[in-house]
Image (cartoon, rainbow, N blue to C red):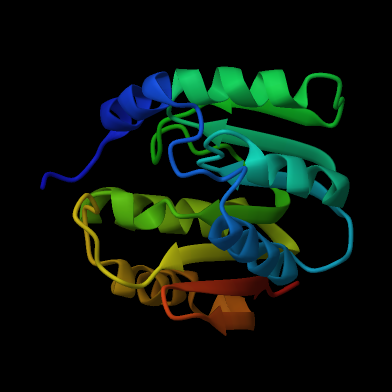
Length: 193
């Protein structure tokens, strides 16, 4: 099977705004709890969520953010997130195709869930340093990804967190790690100086 791209995700969201059953799946809820644990309990100033999909995680992140920017490459997904977050004044949602549209920081928390293995290797090599640069000193980057292979990934899922560790280098310290049978959640804190 061919790796899915932005057009493929847009086609999926046009058919179903919740193609992975984020709202109803017990497994997705379990993963989201792990992601939120990696984010930590404290409220963060500026929060960025990459690949927000239908906004299920955005809604969970909103109480932990003074300002949340949720982005996705699918215009249909972005429309759904705007609908779901209408009235939440701290949430901004926009269409962005990565790595080219990576927002500038600084962000106090950057959440990257189930995105990195969909990027071609060259795109990932561009995006990871941009994520690192967008994190504020003392900020946190949280990654959650499957580590088992699947058909429409552009690269091996088991390798993406290792690539992030290398890209973040000595400027980040790994502060959280939870590895399940199918996924891993990791938090990296950017050093203050």
